[in-house]
Image 1: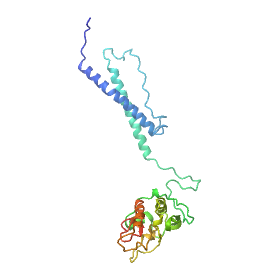
Image 2: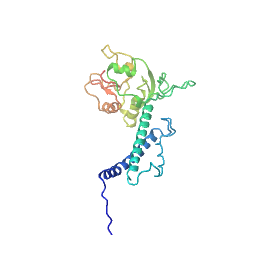
Image 3: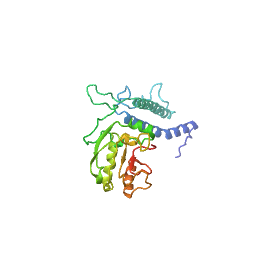
Image 4: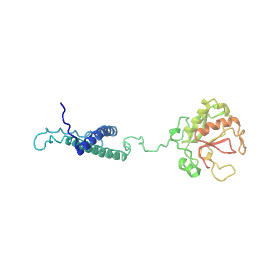
Length: 278
């Protein structure tokens, strides 16, 4: 027996196509949005609601009474489902925007008034360190080398200040000696000499010829980078100022200094400084 097949009306076919195409996408988008909200505010702190969950879909009343969906319109409920998904996505998106905006405006917690320990934003200014212990400013927190005198003073302050004395393997053959330098450069300078020692190149250090010295440049009227304690002289007699070449051992040492951000002044190959353009 053959059953007659009723052809779909144009609007019915279009509705079916829209539902089949968009409903899985919207359902997946709703799940992704909920996961994102969970990551940003798992405890529900971003709003007045106890948790960042989409409101549950109310149970659909039975299809009875005057508001029941007519039996000859089976796509109405699917359109209602799509509408509810759109509404939940809109609410979730609005909550997510509010949470991100509120998180971006938060400030660090204030310092505990009953404690002498500085808060997160309080600058750390360690005293002069003559004991040879490691300074409080890690080398990794020091920014790139400054440019020119203005950049030097912006990073290190006026010349002759904030100096510490730290023991490091900077002496001939890698012997530990006290080195006076700027407190911000101490850890980085120590890291340079420790790497020289670790690579078996300490024998290339024949003389340590100074770091901090509050003086002018040789033959000039402007301050030397030694006045800030951000320059080191090594093997001065073998690589004197004005010489156009440097010894092979000095080149090996220079590679490590350059790796850590120091520069080597042309025709003054004994000299390594943590700045540029000065």
